[in-house]
Image: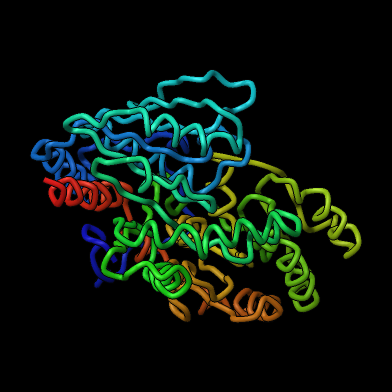
Length: 423
């Protein structure tokens, strides 16, 4: 774990599973204020003090997609949270991404500026070209978000620089790109880019992702910092649990999430629990295939795909669920698992890098090595009320240690250290 996150909690918090009135809710896009929130407020104060002491004044973040992109996910939310808090702490932050159809090229969002230009793939070459022409001034720094295809910032940026790399994409290339294109993407990630980044400071989300980056990309472990993502305070106990077994999953409907495997697992669990209901929240280009699978398995009456939801709707599903599930093949962390945990909901998920840090196996949920075992694992936990409630309490206790303020502080410390190293 990174600085600011702390160790495991020693005490038991309030029972997150008991029925109670829902507290006031916070819109999903709102960044909490810097004060009056215990550990989060303390972490923000520390961030603001670090920014005040630092020579850094302006930070440019280059990323593939913006938060408003229809395919935005955890990576884009991660950038948004950090950029908002850095800006609140006194930095001038600009996020540069590809264009978003139907949206303005420049917007102001919660204290930072977003510049959205260039095509979906042209943004990489355009960003490099602009970088080569830009003369880095005093107090400037760059953050590159390496999300599959890198921007190759070591070749064109000469100031303090940080790289966000959540996880290795590996077989994901072949899931989304056909034949030669998939092989080219994997070659860039595994062979061409790593030698250029071996002297860069890389920040990832989890210890398990860090080990995978070392093993698969060859980037030295000493150059990789770990900074877990936070949990928005809106995710909290409250509401009423579903009267029947309910499994909830959230994510983009894309191949790497393996929602098809999760649907098959739910069909297996349904045989043991006839009253089971399930909801898969999200949108993506795999929707038609998943809807067809639901029809073929005769699950239309109990398995819903409501599309993209945000804010109160997501909160309500987390609070209603008996278990949150993920069959994903690649994750940097598993943010939906800790968000649900903050609502007192345990997880059943695949045993992959990222999930191994988001879920403590046997304590805050269950991890299974083979997606084929998800069905029996779900059925077993759903049927074991005492164990499920105990895991829900443990998931809630642990979730309190993850704040976006701590994430923003630890990532800024890494960038500031790079600035100091250059000085």
